[in-house]
Amino acid sequence: MDAITGAWRWLAAAANWSGEKGVWHRLGEHLWLSGLTLLISCLIALPVAVWLGHIGKGGALAVNISNVGRAVPTFAVLVLLTLSPLGAHGDWPTLIALVLFAVPPLLTNVHLGIREADRDAVEAARGMGMSGPQLLWRVEIPLAYPLIMTGLRSAAVQVVATATLAAMAGGGGLGRIITAGFGNYDTAQVVAGAVLVALLALLVEGALVLLDRACDPMRGRRRAARGKAPAPARAAQSA
Image 1 (cartoon, rainbow, N blue to C red):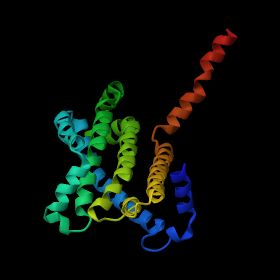
Image 2 (cartoon, helix red, strand yellow; image 1 turned 180 degrees about the vertical axis):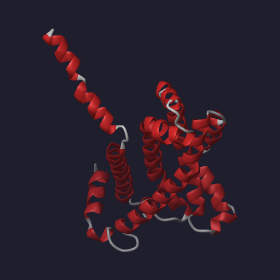
Image 3 (cartoon, rainbow, N blue to C red; image 1 turned 120 degrees about the horizontal axis):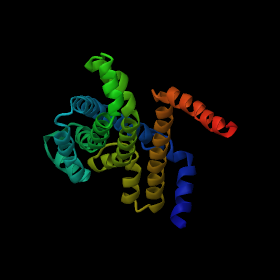
């Protein structure tokens, strides 16, 4: 309880939120690193997963190769990259380690979503004369949208949580608050930093859930289906 009370006092102190070592500055660093990691991961994983899912070849091999990243601890990769020549190039070791960590959930979910798209709908669209790109953008991707967003949310939350490791390589972010607390033997600051990271991960998850609902290409059809669903039931009752 003393640590929790101390963490609350630490968070309530205005001095801990301002300056280069303050929460707002560290939060900006954390969001920048996490956002850049997620952008690079999407640019790598999404085109590969969508294309392999569409043609139905090589997907299993790509997914298995990407999943090797899950078997290797991110911290171990970060240490190795920091000790390599890349260690002299700022945030690059952290960025590469986080990208290797974020690609597997994106690649796996997107590929699975494309491959598991309703085959009857796909074949019907193909029978209507749709070309490959039309089939992909108008049928397969909308049907795979829930799994695509699941992979994006999973990768985003994992990256936000794991980006705290940047502090171990001398980088910025909320992890610096935690490491500074360890260095000063200040348990309250360590707990406060952990709370900030957890809250940020929850906020990112919530924002992506709202984005998911707002951008869902099948939202209108689902609403129409729900509006029509009670009709048979009313007909059966009147009969």
